[in-house]
Structure formats: C-alpha cells, structure tokens
Length: 107
Image (cartoon, rainbow, N blue to C red):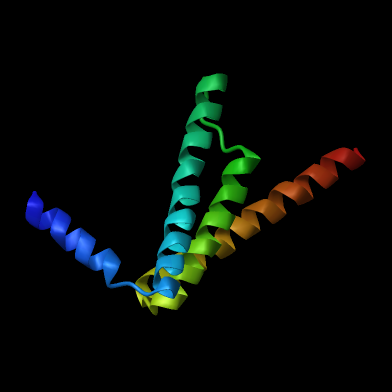
C-alpha cells in the first residue's frame, strides 16, 4: 500500500500546472459523463419504466465534448474516435428531440 501511495504521490508531483489543469478537465468530463447514468436511473425509477430524459443527452454531449478535449490534449486516438463519434450521436438525438417538440407544438 505504501508503494502505491508513493507512486501516486510521485505522479502528481511530477505534473506541471498545465497538466494538472488538463487532468482536472478530464475528470470533470468523465464525472459529467458518468452522472448522466444517475439521471437516467432516477428518471426510470420514478416512472417505473426505462426513460432517457433530456438532461441525459445534454450531460452526454457536455461530458463527451469535455472528455474529447482532454483526449485531443493527450493525443489519444482511441478516446478521440470514441468521444468524437459519440458527440455526434448525442447532438443528433438532441436535434431529433427538439424537432419533435416543435412538430408537437404546432399541432
């Protein structure tokens, strides 16, 4: 355990201020991305049916874009591809939801 804590301490003390900021950005994006599942779970439990609330898609897009910016900074092609494609899907879902709402409002 002491070796692990020593390695973690060494890792963080070796980071520059800019790297610490980007690490924080990465964790922020990942936290938003994870939190969307909590929102979805709560909404589903309240209705006793599987739900995808609008907040789920906004949190998906925000978290995905933040993690994408972190992945670009880290030059990680796996995360860039995954978050880049995912962000288009989240944006498209939001577009479809808003278009449906406009159609429903007109009728």
